Image (cartoon, rainbow, N blue to C red; front, side, top):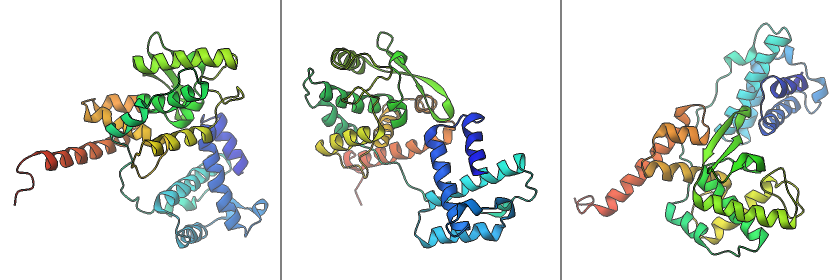
Length: 296
């Protein structure tokens, strides 16, 4: 039944491979627990609320974070709703399953002066790898793309003459992202080097052997670039550059709805978390700059 559910998510709901993989991992972990390591014996229609609570308690005892537990419980809820719709489940045991409170934390981001250090460092414009690595970091920061959107970006969907590109985000939703001259010129430089040395490519970014770039390479490039620039974010990952893009846009006066559209957030509430970051930045700047801010 889990296989049927995952097929449903792919074919009927249009979920991305990464999202489906997350569902698969969550449900496999639950099935292993529910059957003492024999998932082929799973009988989901016989599960009770107490059975599911035991799994959540086990996760908590293993010190799994509240955010991860919430995602796993959400996976269970989606699976059991599917069983109701397609497999005749009458009483849904997940209806009484409560989600642990989500811990409140602000996204990790790099300050604009820190990203400037990373992106202003000189590179050899005749070196294919150096140009590609700079393109990775500049594209992530300039457009706010997700890592998966960048690795899946098709060459034909990038128009440097018009300064825009088309990405396919979560749930196969497409959106058009504008970009500036700096990124456009770097893309043109990279394309010329790539086509000369590796040949034309369906995807914009390629590995050294000409195959599409994978996520692990992007993570390595971003991590090393941020580390070498002395960036002090709590994480050194592609998503930090996405957060930094959104934060800097809002700090410089961009409208919240515009940032929502740029990032591809379904809900404005998701984008609103960046207003907390910009307010914190404003408060810190005020305390540092105003002559009477710290006066007692």
